[in-house]
Length: 297
Image (cartoon, rainbow, N blue to C red; front, side):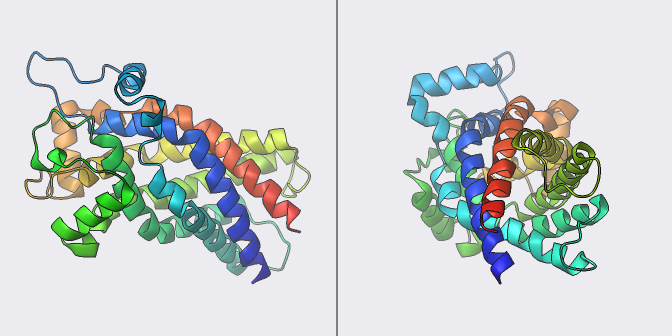
């Protein structure tokens, strides 16, 4: 139980740091992912990431870059604490004896298991966040769902529960969320451990400096997005889709529609902001986790 408490505490601190550092990039990513297809002969609402930043700040002020942060910030303790504690418990099951470092392959298994488990907490949070982030980008699409102007996270939750099938409506997009979190966390924790062992020159990584931990964490975060970004695009498209007049019948249909309308590049909308966010956000997250975990003994 002591180890669980340490993982919970360290995961909470790491997640909070990651969120504060990376949320503006995430907002731009979602805006680019969810903007409606332009009419023939018309330019898209945003020409790129920098244009999305300029339009957001001009229309909503700098606070617009932090739209939707309330939901993940309110639950960041649960999400990251759960992720790191589940990973820690799987580590304990795989470890041959206490204190023995795991192999990279074992860390991949730990990451995959923790990612699938945390998906059930991530999905409702992501849905609320994406609705708040995307509503301005979707304002010109003319759908009934977009006509709703959410005043905040709780307003999104109330509307979804009332008009979109009850509490289960909050789990819209669960399949692509799991397709993102399972493989993504497997790649992230596997790369993180591989880089730590490479930098340490062996499996004992306890003496690595903060710079090395940040480098490993930043590249691990990049590995997460490189491995699963198309699943994130599908997830965002489904979660902001109109409930009464949906464009997509499910994850596979959304994937087919995106490919048909935009080609493979449609599966990488917002990839630049995601990568720009990922490296510093995960670098600070893993550093905060390791420092906090170490300070707890």
